[in-house]
Length: 293
Length: 328
Image (cartoon, each protein chain N blue to C red):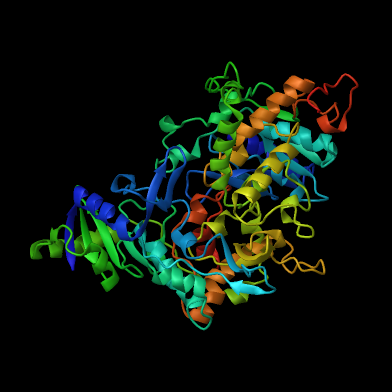
C-alpha cells in the first residue's frame, strides 16, 4: 500500500494535479506517525501508511489556501471532508482524495511503554464503532490486500450511551462534573478537530467573554458543552478529541450521545453524503419538535 | 544522610505526615494516567514508572490564581489575596520537575518577587523519586539533569529491590524523613554511585542544545517544523517551566491564568494586529524562549528534558529533535 500511496503522490505532484500532499511520515521516535506535507516528488518517498497513522488529516486542508491539495484519507478523514464540503469550507476541485483502506488505528495510550511490536497492537476503541467499508468520497481507493479483519464492528454502537442514559440526571451530572473539573483548557480537542475551524472561537472572545477563562468547573463545563453542541450533526466520530485530550476526558461519550439523538430525531448521519444539506441548514416541516418546551 | 525504608515504613511515614502536612503525591486514575493529587494515606501513593501527566508546577503557579479581590466589606478598591500557610510536602516528584522549579525561581523569586510563587515554594518540602525507566521522550541528561539528580529537592527516594533508599539533601528534607527506617550501611553507600550512573545512562535520547539561534530567525526551518502544529496548549500547559500567563477579571477578582505562545490569540493586540500571525512565529517563540532568550538572561536553557511536550503532543512534534536540528 505504501508504494501505491507514494507513486500516486509522485504522479499527482509531477503532473501538477496538486501542489501539496498531506499524508503521514514516521515521527522522530521511529515508531509513531506524524503529519507530512510533501511538495516535491522526492519528498513523497517519506510517506508511510500503517496503524500508527491515527490523525484526521482533513484538519489541515485549509492550511494551504489557494493551493491544490492531495490528501491520504482513511474512512473517518473522508467523512470529515464531506462535512467540510457541505459547509463550503472546501472546493471539490481543489482536493484529490487518496483513500486508504483502514483496518483500525492503534491505541496510543496502551503503547506508551511498549516498543511498537505489531503483535501488541491494540486497536483504539473508536475504531470499533467505525465501518470502514463506508467510504463516502475518494478519487482513488488504495486497497489493503493483506487486510486483517476489521477490529469488529460493534453490534450496537450506542450501547455505552444507552447504559449511561438510564442513570439519574444527578448521577449523570456528577459524572460530567468530575470529568470536566479536570479539564486544563488546553483546547487540544479543538485543535485536532476538522470541524472546529471557526476563525474566532467562542472561547477566545473577550468582548464579551462568553464564559470564564479560568480553569474552574463553570468555565470548563461551558467550554466542553458548547463545543459538543456546536458539533451536533457535524461530528463524524473520528475520536481525535478524545485521543488528544491529555488528561483523558471521555469526549466521545458526549459526541456519541448527540450523534444518537440526531439520528433518532432527524434520521441524519454526518459525513455520509455531500449531496444533502448539513443538518442545521435544513428544515422539514415533519421535523420533530416535541422536545421544545 | 541516607536511610533505608521498607514499603511499610514509607506508608507509615505518609500516614503520620498527614497529621501535620498537606501531602501531595502521584496518584493513579484508572485508564487516565498518573496525576499529582492530595494523598490521604500511604496506600494511595503511586510509586511506579509512569510519569505524572501534569507537572507539579500547578501547585506553585496555579492554572488560575486569584491575585486581587474586592474588599470583603464591599468597600471600594481591591486587596491582595492571601496564600495558605500550612506546611505541605510533595512526595514522588521527579528530578526534572524539581529542576524546573529552580529555573522558575529565577523568574518569580529574583528581581521581581512574586509572593504567590514564593510563599507556595517556602511552605513546600519536595521529596523526589528517582526514575527507573525513562521513556523515549525523556532527554534530561542533555539538559543538565539526571534521573537521579537532587537539584531543587529536599530529599530523593531511590526504589531498590522492594525497599526505598532515601538520600536527605536539606534540613527541610531531614524534618520529614527524620529517623524513619534505618541507616544505610557504609558498604552500601558505595553502590549508590554506580546506581546513579546506571540511572543516568538509562536516558537514551540525547541532543545538543542549539547555539546562536538569533542567526536563524528568518529560516524556513521554523515553517517546516511547525506545520503540523494544531495550536493547542498541551506543550505549554504541561511544561514544568513554561510560565506565561494572562490576567483576567472575573467575578470581582483578578485572576492570573495559564496562557501560552502556541495560541493564536496570545499575542493578538487590541488594534487587531497580531505580531505572531502564523504557527511559524508561534512555535519559533517557544523554542527561542527556551533555548535562546532565557539562556541570554539567566545562563541556562529553560527546558529540563522531561519529555511531556513530546509525549502528549497530539501530532508528535518533537522539541528535542527540533532543537537538536536547529543549526545555522
